Length: 240
Ligand code: SAH
Image (cartoon, rainbow, N blue to C red):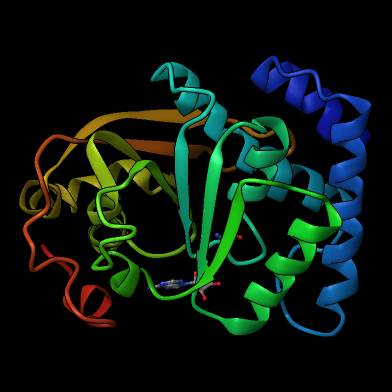
């Protein structure tokens, strides 16, 4: 975990403890082992896991820091896959209360396994679609932060995320170099759903040519009850 340790320090001013590095090593080992059975991720080389999965996930801290987020914030990670960005964030921000949402059952099995393996508390994995959980009173407008990486285009993604965020809370979308243009296409969706663009934070990962972006959106008004629309509709007919 040397690459992760040095990059976390230089990019995020974050010194990882030996216990945290051991947790990341165990996470990487489990990811590779499970990936041989189920396809969880395309990135399986040690360097790629450290930088493109772990460090990239930890980069969300830049947005938390810019917003002076509470260390005990409630965070929901939509379409988390094998746990990104939620689990790396939990490893370094142990007080957050984290809900991981994933539609695919085998990925939820992996999440449950890794939560137990790393001994994480205050983390729940839920097998659900964003469109369902966004209408569930137990989750709707309950979270300080809704985060997602590599799940959907911005107009669709904000329909997944904004219903889950409390007034005054924030959404955080991790995006590639198309982020500025893609964010513009979400203007109408933001207006309808009660969101307002806060800022884009550019992130340069070591050894990765593409600039990454954190797109931060404020929840400034309640989301109308008819959103999110039923499963599949936000993807097929995005609010544009
Ligand atoms: N966030 C992870 C996984 C990205 S792949 C990462 O960055 O590595 C996208 C994941 O989102 C897939 O696992 C897919 O099953 C899940 N997903 C896509 N649409 C979803 C929805 N509407 N609700 C819940 N999960 C969804």
